[in-house]
Image (cartoon, rainbow, N blue to C red; front, side):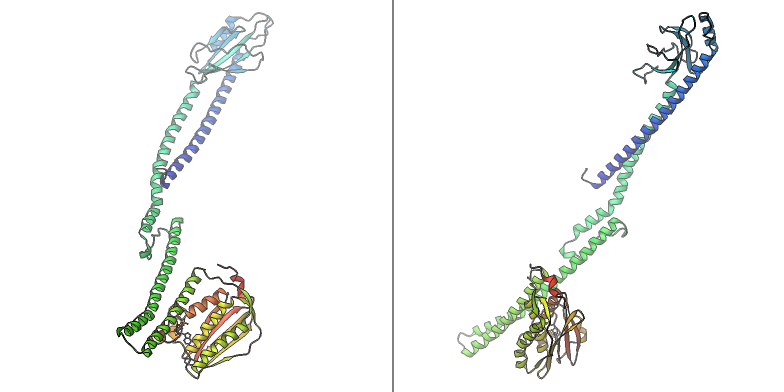
Length: 480
Ligand code: ADP
């Protein structure tokens, strides 16, 4: 039972309330008792003084006349209080117990020597007893004849204990009632307060990878539970998006891989259908298979790169390098491809550009962009590369005079597996699976830079890579 927050909260509620109630009751009880005792004592003291003043003068040289004393006492009347006179041996010589119950409760011996009033309790040990009382006595000045008398005043504690007992029982009843109310009320209130948690748990139980679109109920979005539900829903949203992205990736990947595989299968099936074939036919089939294998391995490698990039599994090692040299190198490599297609590849003269970055990845980014530029530029066209320092960055531009990218497709070209014209690029030699720009953008980002399409129309396309001159390598030191 204690495993539930509800019962624990209720118990805490009741526990704290009982501590408060006990402390409060005890405080009020003690204060009331003290006030009543003080009032009782001052009443006793006043009676004592009055009695003493009403007694015959003890300085009289004659021995005290007991008759006179008795007479004086009988004339005095104090409601609720008994008065008496006793001698040194503790014997009552005169008393007036009309105010309370006889007999007069005398103080314990030995009596105090002082003339000042002395208080006592009867019986001493059990002040809460049935017939207990409080008393005060005072020694009268010794008479010239040598007799010593004490005046005693007592009062039953019953009058004082009455209100205290009423207080005690009222406190007990109020405490029981308050605790009962706190317990029952707390139990129901916590059930109400925790109802959203139960609803959230129930909804959360239904959520699986298949229905990540479901959301937890948000009661009051401004309270803690509402905020928790909102945060959880946002998490579900992110998870859902990431799941959807992964599913899309899988679907696109299998779709891309299916074509070369089926081309290879068809080529081999057709070739094997006949038991005997010319060498040229075998060669043709093998060349188709080789072409598709090359395409397949490029797609697989690109996918592998992106998958590892996503999981942080690529070791990005920053070294000191010259960006201008790297770009010139990539341009030289691409020149072979360009020449084969009858495209002129120009390199705008550039100044030294020291940089810190991953040489292999940067080369790959430039090659992907150059590859695309050559691929989508018809024979006779021009591809131009340039690098210039601007403010705190290097601007590397790769422009071509190619077919351009349709306006509606421009927003999507950096998405994985996106190709403007699938039919056109699917089988073309060297064509990718629409992963080249996604990889290039990741490489720019990992160097704290960015890759953007700045212009694309019927007259050609320009891609711009912006890299920080301070060295994009600062963030790359982590090697996974
Ligand atoms: P792929 O590896 O298939 O070329 P990319 O991600 O590199 O894929 O490019 C995505 C799409 O962007 C390509 O299918 C192509 O249509 C378009 N594209 C990229 N670069 C150029 C360019 N320089 N000129 C025209 N279209 C381009």
